[in-house]
Length: 293
Image (tube, rainbow, N blue to C red):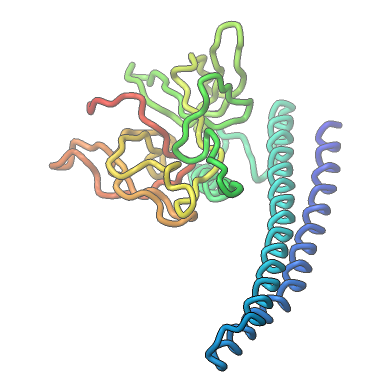
C-alpha cells in the first residue's frame, strides 16, 4: 500500500516538475525581447560612436528588467531542483520499502544475484546523478558537499551509501562501499551491508568506522574551496571495485562534470603510486590516517 502511495505522489511531483519546466521556457522566451533590445542599443551606440544620457538611461532600464527576468527564471529553476530532490528522495524510500518487503525490480535486483557489470553500472549512474550544489550568492556549501565533511553529530540515514572500515577474511582491515541499514542511538553503532554482498554479510560498526559519502557535487567554478586540493591524501574508490584505497589528489575537477584524477598508493610502482586514474566526486572522501603505509 505504501508503494502505491509513493507512486501516486511521484506522479504528482513529475507533473508539477513538467509545469515548472514549461514556465522556465515561457520566462526565457519572454525575456529574449529585452535581451535583443540591449544588443541593438549597444550596436546603435557603436554606430554613432557616443554614449548620450538617453542611451545611458535606456540601458539602465533594460538591464534592470533583464536582472529581474533572470531572477524570476532562477526562482523557477530552484523550485524545479527542489522537486527533483523530492522525487529522488521518494524513489529511494520506495526502493528501501520494496527491499524490506522482498520486492525487487529489474533496475534494482538483489546484489547477491547481480552480475558484476550491472553493479558497476549502477555505481557509475549514482555518481553521475549526484546533484550539483547550487547556492545563492554569498551562500557557503553545506556539509557533505564535495570535500566538506559531515558535522560531528550527523547520523547517516537508512539507505545512505558510506565508506565503512571492516575486517576482511584474512584479518586485515579495509574500507568498503556499504549501505546503511540502521543506527542504534543507545550504542552509537551502525548496521551496514557491503554493497557487493548485500544481505550476505552485515557489519555492526562504530561511528568512527563510517564516513558518509558526499550528497552534492561541488562546483569547481563557484566553490573550489569545497574540493580536495592537489596532493591531498584521500580515500578513493578504486575503479571497477567496491573498495576504497588511500590516494593522492593528482588533479581536482576543473568543471562540474569532471572527476578527480588520483594516484593510488601502490608498492608495485617505483615511486609508490599508480598512474593517474579518474574517480568521481561521489567516491572520494577524506582519509583519517595521515601516515603512509
